[in-house]
Image (cartoon, rainbow, N blue to C red; front, top):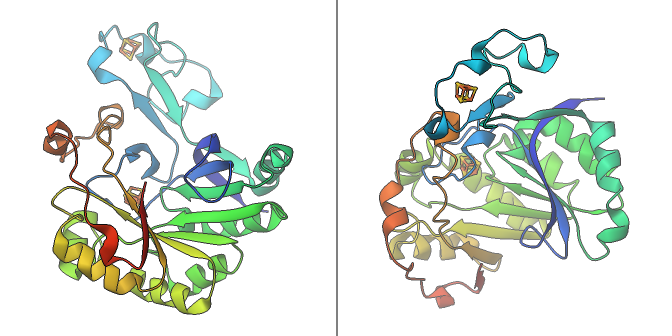
Amino acid sequence: MTYGTVFDIREFTVHDGPGARVTVFLKGCPLRCRWCHNPEGLPPAPQLMIRESACTRCGACRVKCSHSECQPFSRCLHACPSGLITLCGERFSSDELAKRLSGYAPFLKNGGVTFSGGEPLMQHEFLSELLTKTRPLHRAIETSGYAPQRIFREIAGLCDLVIMDLKLADREQHKKYTGVYNDVILKNLQYLQQSGREHIIRIPLIPEITDTKQNLLAAAELAGDSQVELLRYNRAAGAKYETVGKKYTLDGLSAQGEQALPDISIFRKAKIL
Ligand code: SF4
Ligand code: SF4
């Protein structure tokens, strides 16, 4: 049996596959998309989130404590009088998590469970066991597609639905804005389309980065007959960066007015979420 690290479990989500779902966020991602709104999901290990802007520097959390859960960190998780410190990332065995998820079955009649992240394929052994152990629930993954082809194919074969991102079609632009080249992503996408497996391609609409006419035309070409969902830019994307000691570098986008949405008739099957 394998163990994995999860940073959130959201009940009754409605945009991560059909029906009402439970979405599990697996920790760790090899990409660094500049617009990522889950910066706490990127490092694979559990970590502290601290609201530094409200911290009075009283030092209470720096006093050595005896709680076992605090020992990996240099601070006590329970000492802050303002509750500014939270632990992000919980370890589960696949048995334990699958049992918990299966317990939702009576409430998820037309829905199921979706494994998201971070990048869920980073914990592919744990994910593989979860996908097997949560049958007969409807099981989806939400992935960047950035994984070795063997792993991608094995995991896709265990899912009822694969929701896969297509961020930037241009190789150099992809590297510039996500930190990695898109070669393996495009190979995995092509496999998915040819496999006949149920899938949805998701394109985040990041102003002047992914929502350009050039990128969307290229994405439409790559999408072909696949179902496409275009995701509006999340203006609150930068909200959690401070708590993990990072700076959100697309801050200027948040201040701009209503996002102009693209003409989606260039896609054969598309909708905007
Ligand atoms: S206990 Fe809270 S307020 Fe005090 S130093 Fe730690 S985080 Fe800041
Ligand atoms: S692939 Fe997703 S989780 Fe990973 S950095 Fe990009 S937006 Fe964030």
